[in-house]
Length: 141
Length: 148
Image (cartoon, rainbow over the protein chains, first blue to last red):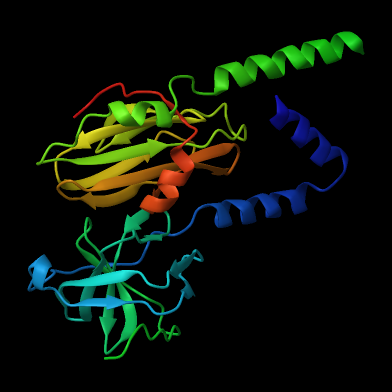
């Protein structure tokens, strides 16, 4: 019923073109794109007890390609769980981390020479690169 | 005008009563929750008591099977085998959440309400344990329709 009322108002106030453009914008904004990723095999899974652990020393904020913001919290601990061609893979030991596009995916950090280069999605078994303009150093090499 | 106000108030009350979860609070249920068995993990699903979008109460699907309902102010939990899981809600726009769970691990899935294309939608998020513990305290246990 309210659709009819809105369409009536739009027609009567001669703003139908602008409104359709606005609606198109809303539709485009409302549906975030899928997280770009490529299948990858996690190698050399390491025993949890012996795994290297790293701590984030200050909050790290960044924006994903999808537009969603994420924060890696200060003092969270990250445990080395394996490697990819793109870098070492660290899973959180004491927090949760996810990346988001059209859907939300639990994610591990992929770090190369101390720099965050992307994410490993353990369910999808895929690597999702961080945009190349980001330059996030998480820790010393 | 007075009749209109009365009618509106009645409708609002009806919506409020229908919309919110009822049942024992988390603080009451917590002590009676079964101890997590050695080969399983536990997933908590919860939704704040906000009235925004309270009329939207989609089913909660875990790996495609309905395990509960997303009710405002409600929570429920499931004990599951360590594996990979996908949570989805039958909302206007389906947003899936994927995560893993290990042995004796607890995961929290918050069901948040956001503005969809035409109506409100409910979508799942993975929440940090500390935030989950803080947010779930005053919510009511709604149980689950099906357990794994």
